[in-house]
Length: 442
Image (cartoon, rainbow, N blue to C red; front, side):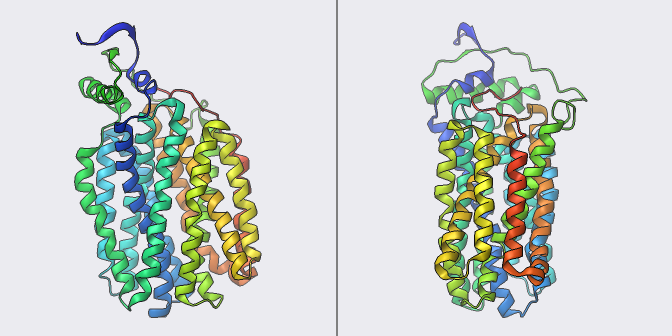
């Protein structure tokens, strides 16, 4: 490396951490974020499709619950497998493959003629979606400068709001437009297939992953690309690959046991409440007597509140730190969920729904920032993927449990349970370690 500045020797991770936010960071964020938004659009669309099929196919609540839940069964499997593959074959490859899987399956869902086939395809969609989310956040986290890492990951998660807003717009404008409106809405899901063809070549591979596999030249090229984008001269880095993780380097080893348990608890509780509420809100509003189009309009307005939630969380996460920001937004979600359960007028439904959307999605942004920071490189994908997979168990249970809770205690019980789950998640968040401003573990 004769052209390197040799006065100071830094690791490649340290060289990335010292950089400002550059155009290459923006390209990585946008490239990952578009995939994230497409994922959100897919998840959001099914809530509108459920409401349409309930009327068109005369489906009962139990069948609707399975349509809403089966994707999360696939997501649980996908999150576990995707995390393991990301640590073995790389973040970028897994990201592209999962986009391809769920894009094709979503497009095929538009052609189904039976509930059974729709459920099968939704399961496949879930596998791709579940594997992609933790992998994308890990890749972005590993490139983001440490001073703004939390903010950058929250910005990535904010693309979820963009995707959900797109789903709400499609649900509002396309689904009610004709008997086949729900099919056209699902057909939009083929977009990720085309995107996956470009994503493989457009995003860099994780430097830490490349080093862990002994691919030093590739790692050096990636770092130099970001340094060139920032106008920062390169410095010398060790040419040897870092020591491989030992067999005891496990997410359940004594060093990581408490944080893993706390992270899993937050993931479980936030999934239970978020998906239980937002998958069912359009259908619940129709059951309350609102016309289909009107209920979709309410959902669209409520969804728009996600964007300021992410914006505030992105600002606070570097001011307050990850742990406090996550706990506060989860506590706010608990209060908003309980209030939504008691809302009966249009005004109260919109106000409490927007408040729930604001706090809940801000909490999601903080959670995705926390996960990759609390594990070393060798198990980072596995750790974030395993937590997401455990959370997907709650995602499966949530849509199935809503009809049972409605029968037992109505909306008050449903959203009261979700409020308690948010409170439990807030308590677990306070157990997590604080890594604001610190470098990622090697």
